[in-house]
Length: 307
Ligand code: MTE
Image (cartoon, rainbow, N blue to C red; front, side):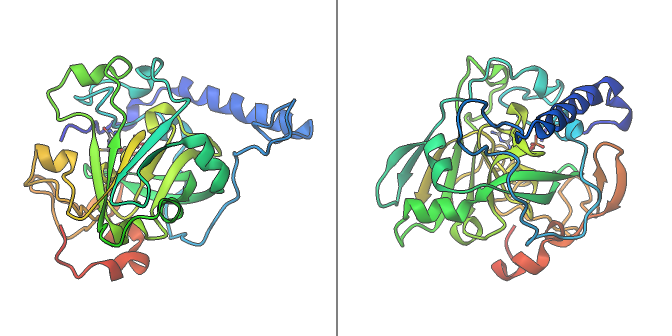
């Protein structure tokens, strides 16, 4: 897999400025009696920042700075060889309006508008550890909702045992798609009990604001006990299936990227150890934790054989 592992020295000092400016703006709005993002003209409730849910907190390092989580990204549709900075390539990517097509073993296959779904499902913020298969790790405050809330709304049939996600395919807006002979668009999947697990989130924001395009706007999946490639970005299709769906990296390198891909320190990648991880942006090393620290919540899903 071609995943960019940044060096600590690569982060330019100037990146910190826009974030500081953002917080200043928030303070100004707060002083004026307005929450960040509130409309001056309408009275609709702002989506961000959403209330925090600490139910699934686990010991972790400090939250990764916003500029680092938004500056070091893997998004192959834009940067298939991990050589460029994704955030500099996303300008043309249109994220509104956004539709999600739901198909397969479900009560009513149909296309949903994301804004309509967000009127039905309230958002919450959760701070999660996030671990890439190539060892870098982050701690990110994501805003979103449990995938289980959406699945309940969609009403899959009892024969649905897996869920398949497909990322949007927009070669004109995603310059990397023409550059690499990958089986586009990006696709991933989960077993239904993994998808229904309360830790699994559909994410629309981070750091108290809408998700940056490079992190998978306007909506992505986050499965914190699995390697990062199991968390697909910019979801355009959801399909309920009876059999295990194929996944993008498994299709490309079957021996290295299994369907389950849970974070397991004792299971080395065929080409490197998974015993330690490196925190972005300092690249400080620390031991990898079983299921990325979420063992008490998810161990019951597995009997130890899944890969
Ligand atoms: N989703 C899409 N559509 N395309 C991608 O290239 N990369 C995956 C995952 N989701 C990827 C994707 C990988 S390898 C990782 S590690 C995470 O997104 C990175 O998420 P981040 O950039 O928000 O840190």
